[in-house]
Amino acid sequence: MNLSRAALLALVLPIGLAAQTPAPGSQANPVTGVFRGRTMALQRNLAQAFDSIPEAKFSYKPTPAQLTIGTIAEHLANDNYFFCNQFGEMKATRPEKDTATPDSVKAKWPKDTLVAKLKESFDFCEKAFAQVDDAKLADQITMTFGGQSRNAPRAQMVLGHVIDMADHYSQIANYMRLNNMIPPTALPRPGMRN
Image (cartoon, rainbow, N blue to C red; front, side):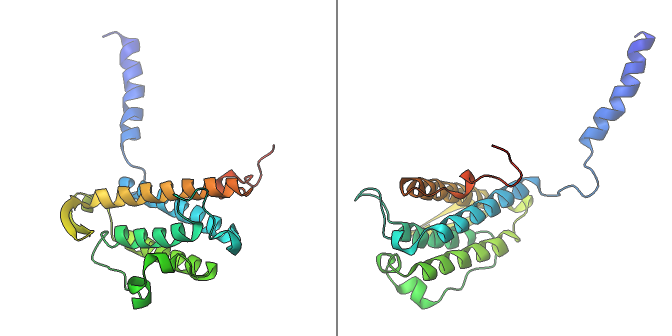
């Protein structure tokens, strides 16, 4: 090896090793950190979307086969509890009115009630997420849906939660556009020029 290659290796090798060493204060759980960050962003966008839709539009659905905006709010709150109850030992406690009332009836509750219930589910999920770290993603959990139980890794519930919220945000964003409303992610960002 000639002297110039040795000098280059002497300079590059420490830089390469330093890049592989976590910086002080770096995130200990990068995978759950990404999921949590995306979850919180989706919660903010969904809350902002439902807050901005007028109550008169909560019965709106683009076609007879689709869900109303109120149904989506109610369904999303239920989904949040379904997924986030699997994040750890902490489980949601919901009033009997919320669990015993048929979904079709809850979907017609007033906007302020539906949005409050949705935000309560977001709060629970944020607390439930605090129980999850990268090491716990592989833990086997038992989930029950439609009377059927099966085992799955906790990661399936964490990923499913993010995908479910992204799906419903897309749905609400389209409903908003169909009603000449701008979804939160399409609003101009502060400090951005047109």
